[in-house]
Length: 111
Length: 114
Image: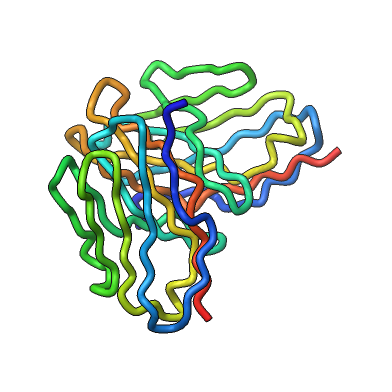
């Protein structure tokens, strides 16, 4: 089993749709969780850290489910500019600063 | 603005000709990472520095070396590039602290091997 797994997609949705991505991780002792966004041929950029209580930033909501070992990202009212690859990143146990990346989920928002 | 800078943005080298990629940061972060990313794949960690301590990933080929002369700069040396080393090379930084090692990436260097 891979350490961090994501559905690669692509998720093809119309503008205004709500879309959700899940990411599962295998290390139950993991403590830090992130979503990054990566545009084609660009570097990953931090979208959100994921906290135990869940967190929201505008149209984006991230949730953490420790019992089931997954994190989720919900995007409401999708915009064309949301088209990108969304990378799930999990840092290891004990405050480890070594991240493990999922392979990313591709989102295509069309008019 | 504080940032991570990589030079060059594009590098073309010949098969077997050594190449050096550079990374600098104004964030004063103590951890610096080098990743290799190929098309449609996740970034693959090559090695990282925690302060001055170098940490090599077990599956990083010996062909890849790194130097960190000071906190701000880090270099990736590819001693004898092969065609399979063509990729995007990403430098990232993070800081020990409350944000639990959020990473900040440079724009990357796209390496072509001819």
